[in-house]
Image 1 (cartoon, rainbow, N blue to C red):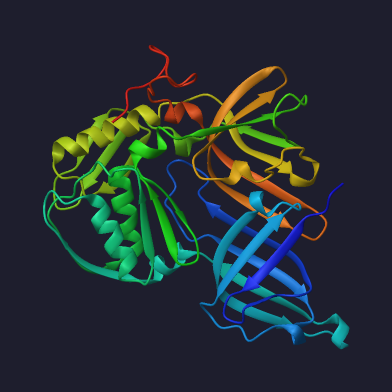
Image 2 (cartoon, rainbow, N blue to C red):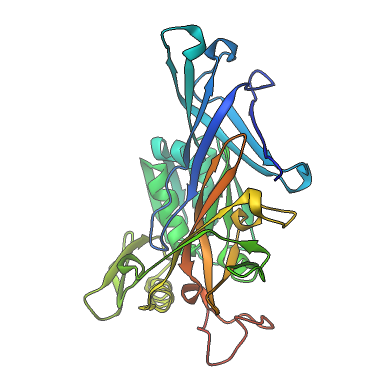
Length: 352
């Protein structure tokens, strides 16, 4: 069995950390209705005397591959904390580095911004990033527009989250950058990876968790456009509330109706899937953790579809284990022309 190459690079010293024993990190979200928050992780190793000088905010680059750097996993974080534990003798000394991504910096930052009614909501999100030393990259064309807003020293992550709510954008963070995927982009670019329990898929898994998620179900959606009156879609006791910067009440209504359609799945569905990278025959063992991935999971003769919302990685010099957090694909089953799964009349929902 091929062993992984697990490398941790410290950008400030232009060197790799030696004696890394394990690393783990989690990014994204678990449920469709979760707020975005900082991705975090921990790197553990031996011989703290060999560590370079580490400072809070230093960039850490993690790469994992199986001999082919063209299909490696590459993630960037920043140093959040460093702990040294000393044993009875120097050979027992260990170190631990806490790491975090750009969302954590938004969470500690503020933003001051004035939006003219009709501005792209992407401009508001971009202001949150640029004022906190981060870069925001737009993929696709943002279709939502902001109402007139004067934002003064507000929490940058809260404002950014509200902007993402307004567009229903999917967002992903690195150490100093965030990628923004507009809804017209991710709805048309969900790539499919296949898992199976009988060897017929590209990937095999070692554990599935099913469940019905109350957090991902609603029969009433209440949108609170900041600076305007709330807008209600549907009726019922399972209510989902969110803030937005919707341009007007009509746009807020469209947003609420869109979410009401997305959050209408009652059945028990796949919540998480785990797989061991070492046992995979696929060349790219990390494709399921890429942006905008739909997983087709074959389980005891039936196939279930889920969209990857986030993931956790545990890596050591001997193996790499990945857990994917899935929302059922029914949440995202909006009509996409010419798509074999989402291009069927009477089976898919209308988009927005």
